[in-house]
Amino acid sequence: MKKVKIILAFLISAVTLAHAQTDNGMMSLDEFRNPKKRKIIQIPDFDGYQTLKCDFHIHTVFSDGLVWPTIRLQEIWQEGLDVMAITDHIEYTPHSADVKVNHNRAWEMVKGLAAENNIVFIKGTEITRQTPPGHFNAIFIGDASGYLAGHATNEQDKQAVLKAVEQDAFIFWNHPGWKVDQIDGSYEWVDFVDELHKEKNLHGIEVFNGFEFHKKALDWCVDKNLTVMGTSDIHNLVAHDYNLGDFIHRSMTLVFARERNASSVREALEAGRTVAWAGKYIAGKEEHVRNLFNASIEIGKPFHSKTVKNSEGVEKTTNYYEIRNNSDLYFELVLKSGDGTGKIVLFPQTSQILTAASGQDYLNYEVITAFIRSDKHLIAEIPLK
Image 1 (tube, rainbow, N blue to C red):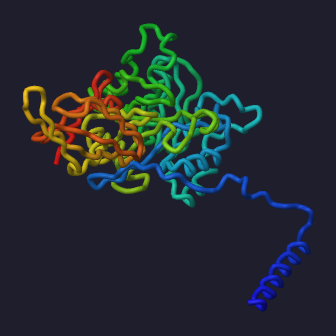
Image 2 (image 1 turned 90 degrees about the vertical axis):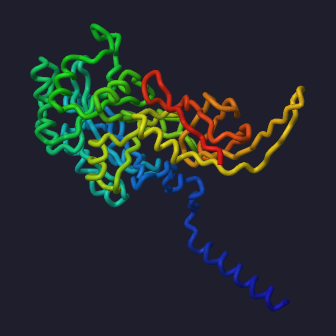
Image 3 (image 1 turned 180 degrees about the vertical axis):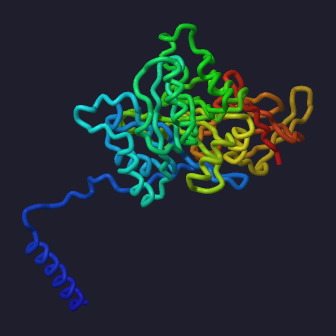
């Protein structure tokens, strides 16, 4: 035993001596570094589709954003998103005195790094127009330098959008309720947008833009068969604008794609297989919201039963269930029909106890954080096994 102690003492002395010989008066404080790691956003796949977390509206210093394009990629990777599109303004470049105007440069800088980090990177631009009609994002574009700049007549506005049409872009209307106090006639479906829609040159509308919910836009998407979009429209650092935490994420579009690649994202967008997500809320067409909710929620068999008699001697049996939320989404459920728990709040990746009178096949709940129209929430059927 004494021999072992001597050997250990010798090894410790040798390591200490080696350290002393290489110490140049500087000590690394690596424990204070932000570890390089990627969050995993838990949103379930379903029906053979992958649920891709996407932000199609992002700005950099090449328009009016405050960060370099590579920072945008780092944010996307760290936050756990799958797909991004940098959509700098063509017409508005306030940093031009310091940053050379090059509408393709952000794409050129990031496309290789995106591939190396398994991020689907889609080329895009923002066509900045008067309000109304407002701004439009064009993604899956070609050369970004050939767009008509400036604010002028409706005809010139249309020419700028038609440039995106010529490039076979997917075009969506940005934040249609933005600056509504400056619009003569308020936040409404305008003639310019109606013309684009009738010509099949408008494909989606932002329902969530950053911290705003454009409720009318959801109705327009449903009624006019347009794709529901959610974006951050981020200009500053995401961590500056959002209180990021374990379950707090930027506003985004959930795209239900067959594969994790640009062509599959394009196909899903054209088919309208999306749900917009911002904070506690999701919004989309009923089919997709329902599928997403059902894929996120799990309820087991009753684990306990209790029978009591009322004042008239009539027995009532109550079953107890565990209901789980297996996603990073947030759901508030209010009972609409059946005999059970009146309100359930399902925080991300948590469970609650649900009680229901015995003999029922299901309970109907209104999911008040899931919008399928501006004034209508998803009604979900919770099976009682």
